[in-house]
Length: 117
Image 1 (cartoon, rainbow, N blue to C red):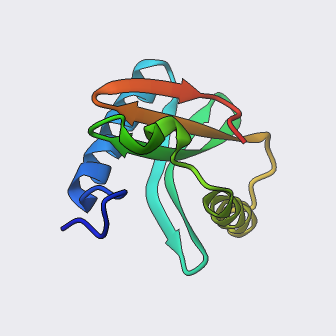
Image 2 (image 1 turned 60 degrees about the horizontal axis):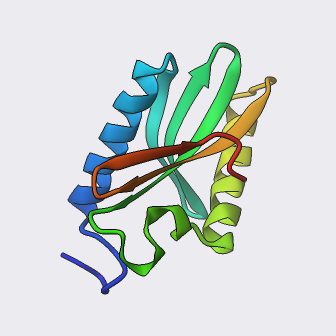
């Protein structure tokens, strides 16, 4: 079910996350966890590149309307992701370099933005 004209069905988002995970794995990143949820935010994917931890937001759009997936990340969403990542880092006692990436999927085309925010 679609919540409004700007959002996509949940199953499409999950398919986008799977595409992103496979895309990054093909480029040498190692999967750690997906869909980590806290009451204040969610992390779509957590992967590692060597010793570096990567917290990934996945935006999927079946069409490039409304600015497409590359423009779908709001400052509020970034804040929620950062809070969720900080919590994850604390509870897992991670003492390593971390970064935030964006995977934007528009009509099947994947765009990877390392250190997006």
